[in-house]
Amino acid sequence: MAHGKNPDANMIPVEEARRIVLGCMRSTEVREVPAWQAAGLPLAADIKTDIDLAPFANSAMDGYALHAADLAAATADGPVVLDVVGHEAAGYVFEGEVGHGQTVRIMTGAPVPEGLDAVVKYEVVEVLEGDGNEGSRVSFAAPAKPGENIRAAGLEARAGDVVMAAGEVVTPAGAGLLANAGHAFVPVHRAPRMGIISLGTELVDAGAVPARGQIRDVNGPALMASAREAGAEPVFYGIAPDDEERICELVRRAASECDVVVTSGGASAGDYDYVTALIEREGEVLFDRVSIKPGKAVTFGLLGETPFFGLSGNPAGAFVGFELFVRPALRKMMGHTELARPVQEARATHGIKKRPGRAAYNRARVERAGADDELEVMQAPTQNSALLVDLHRGNCLVILDEDAGRVEAGDTVAVLRYDVSEGTVL
Image (cartoon, rainbow, N blue to C red; front, side, top):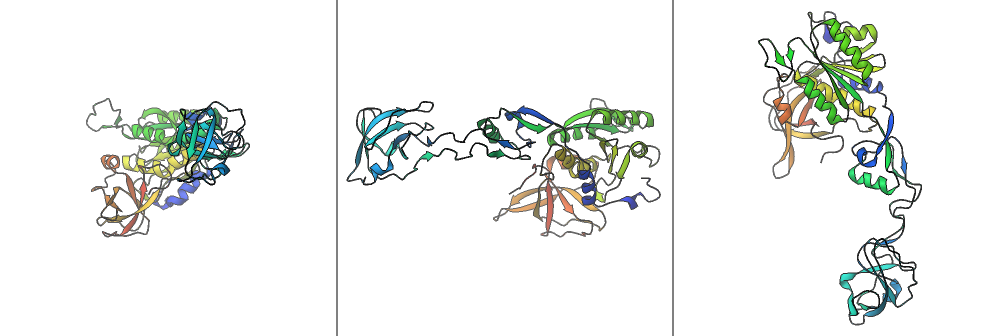
C-alpha cells in the first residue's frame, strides 16, 4: 500500500479500522490455571457445579432451630417454652429426631436438622433453665415463619448448573464460587505475547544521557506498561536504528516468537517506512492511515499469521493508537467480550477548537463537580503530541468526530475513560 503523493488519501475512519483489526484476531490457546489465578480473566468454557450450592439447608445465624408451627401462638404475654435437645455447630451434624415442643441450639452455617423449618436468632430467645445448650429450657415471645433464617439447599445453583459462563470475567468472589463448585483449576486463554520494537536512530534508552539530536525512548516503556495493564505479556526487542536490515530482522524475529508485534516510529529515508515495506513484501498491509488526531500514521497488517501494528513515533499518537486498536485486539485474543474502554458524556468546562476533518482524541481530565455532582471535563492546556505528562495526570480522551467543529463551554461531549477498565462507569 504505497503512500504516493497524498498519503492522507488512504485514511480510513476509526470504526472501520477497528472492525478490520478485530476481524483478524484469533484467540490464544486455552490452558488450565488455579481458580485464584484466573481473577481478571474471562473463562474459556462454561463451568458447572458438581453439587448443589449450598449442599444442604443451613442456618443463616446463631439461634435455635425448631418447628415454626410450635410458635404459632407465641406472644410476649404468652410465650412458648421449648426443650433444647441438642447442639449443632458448623461441621457437625445432629443425628437425633426433634419432636414438637423441642428445639436444637444451632450455629451459623450448620445444617438444619431434618424436619425443622425455622431458626430464631439467639438474641430474642430467653433462657429459662440451663446454659442455653442441650438440657436447657428456652422461651419464645413471637411466632416464626417457615424458612426464617434458613439458607435453602441449592440456593445458588443445583448440581449440573452452569455457575460461570464462557467469557465471564472471574472476580475474587468468583474464584471462591469456582472452588465451591468443585473447580480448583479452570480454563482460560493464554496471555498473548506482544513484541515491542522502538524505531529510530535518534533514540537512546532511559539509562543513557541523550547527546545533541538524541532523545530517550519513551514509547517502549509506555507500550510495555500498556500491554501488561491489558493482560498481555510484553516482550521488548529493543531500539532499532534506521537500518532496513536490522529493522526487518527484529520484526521477523518478533513475529516468529510473539502473538502480535507493535512498533512505534519508523520513518527513515524521506517518508519511506521500512516496516510497512516489509509487511507489503512478505505479508499484507490492511491499512496504513486512520482519520484520527493524534496518531494518524497507524499501520495494520499481517506478517504470515501474526498481526502487526505500526504506531506513531509521537508518544500521544502511540498511546491513542494502542488504546483504540491494540488493546481491544489483545482483549479479544484473551476471550474478553467487552473490548473497548467505557465512554461517558460530560460537560465541557471551556471551549475546544476543532476543525472538521480527522476525528480528535484530546487529552483531558473528567471529574464530578457542583451541587448536582455532574461530570465535567477539562481539556489539557496543550495537545502537543510529544508530551506525556497530560496523559499521566489526565484520565480520559475527549472524542470529537470527524465532522465536529468547535465545542463551546457547557456543551456535552463524549469522553473515553482510559483510567477505568471495560464496563460501566457511574
